[in-house]
Image 1 (spheres, rainbow, N blue to C red):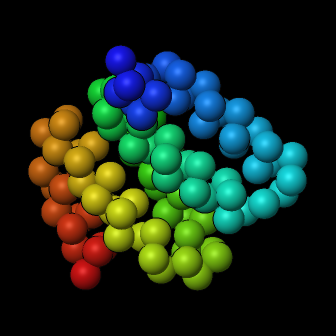
Image 2: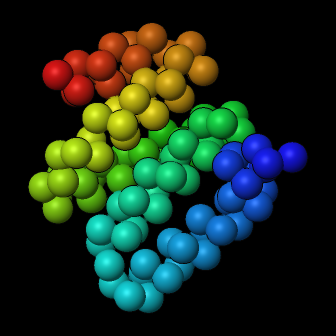
Length: 99
């Protein structure tokens, strides 16, 4: 269905390609946004470890670029990933980081 383009293999393939293009163009903002979308995709497909790793990479780039507007959604993605693995200390840390 239509959902597969949001969170399925088709979305993952598209995002992987977008990440490659961002790297070739050496565009940190594009890489950050693509990592953020990949992290959400990993949460939706229950690949929690990759979601956490990818969200943290995007957060590091957002901080480097001083892009505060993407931090809140990224921390929400991180919070959701930690909740899926029942890591409530991680959830609390993500919530505190949003404040």
